[in-house]
Length: 232
Image (cartoon, rainbow, N blue to C red; front, side, top):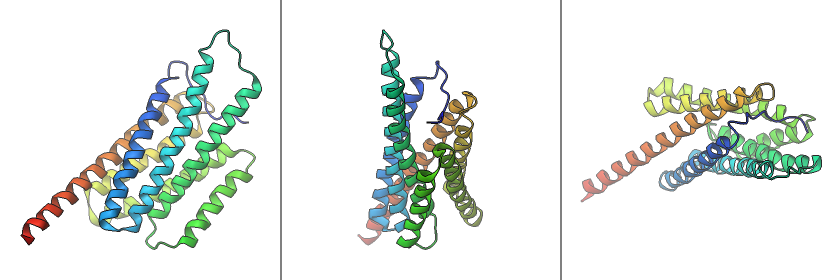
């Protein structure tokens, strides 16, 4: 298995804490998005919600593999065979890659103006097949992730340019940060700073996305209450 990333010793443990935060935030985003979908019945919100549930699951897999590795490294005397490293690392990393790829494909699909299940299955089949068939799955995964996130970034940029809405601008910034984080992770096999910077970009991005959804939810609740008052 190829090297997936280089982690500095001083950051090992802190990255697990950040991954737990990402898990909580993305899961919360998925739940809030689903609640908005139940109110609005917008198919894009349903896809948006589903995408973040898969993204949350991917961080759970990543966090578990890092926790196992950390617990093994802290044991004395140090006994950790090459076979164990390969098996634990491969299962965790590939689970993270597949779940995150499904999440990003679903997210990109949510930005499409017309929803067609055939288009979704086409995107899903091509994306997953490319990773499974690739000899270097990590590089292929990063290329696909950057491509999918660039679609999402472009979507929110166009939406913001047309509507001049602050929430759309913040969404554009958030997904741009996620795009940059994936670009940084692509270099994390060469230098450890990319791994740290990638995590920080992700933290900023998910915080902005959560902030946006909370604000939209509050606005919808306020509007709903005003509508009820007007009816009475």
